[in-house]
Image (cartoon, rainbow, N blue to C red; front, side, top):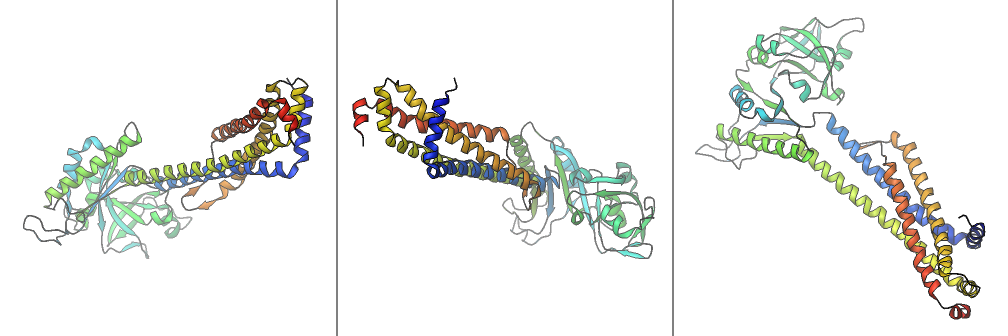
Length: 415
């Protein structure tokens, strides 16, 4: 039941010690404020890193080769390892259960690219139809390469949105027209975009089989790119990805006579492995932020407890008078606890509102590498405030209980 007289007493006590109450409330509000801001930036780091990985497929594996660095079975180090069509076919057959998408890649070297009289400065790559989802690219116009293009060794090309803006006039309709690559005409069948922006749109794609035939690639494969099938959980997906990567390296080392301990000849880039590292890093940072924030809140609660001890000490004689007039111990406890809860709750909600408002206002405008839209779950924040209020109850209870247990005579004698 609402007790107006008790609330008047609480406000009178607060007004008599404005500065002390303000500083106590500030320490509590600062704790909540710091915790919410830290959690917000922890989530912002998680969002930013997730965005960086979204530029490419999240479960992409990229394989390339270099020179051997160790002697093996009588073969000297320094041999240049080159993958071929047989390797690509075997991997697809042997490890097909892992694969969601696959594509060989051949980089076309020393080419001249022209459209009409204009010379274009872009890279040409021979790829398979699955390369689009592997690179997480989207088609803005036309289509990507197909299995039919591969089978027929078609002379078709897919260009980027960046190229369309830079090369073709606004009133020009480039689809169906031709560019020349080393003098060979290729029909433009589509334009792609990449979430990574212009830097990722420097490549012209042609069918892998066409690149091998037209540009003397023989059966050479520069790179192998794969997307893996997702598993039930993130950890299971990472485990399957790491297993596939190891099997891949073991096979290629065996077939190309590379020493098992040679890490330079066969190289595998696994985005899930990188994602796992960043996932663990952000998790550790979040735990650290929680630790710092909670320590700050505890400091505030300790401040409340100390102030309540002072309040009880100052009002010891008053408590003795109340007991002499018949006041029950629990009414004394309730009076002091109510004051502690009031200070804690007002300060806690004040810090929460200010910090949430600041994140809402400033968060969407923050543009920093690996930090995107700092925010915090409101349910988590409000739960923290209620836990803080619970801590405020404890901070007020123990001094109050000590005062309530004091004998009436001792309380009246206190100076």
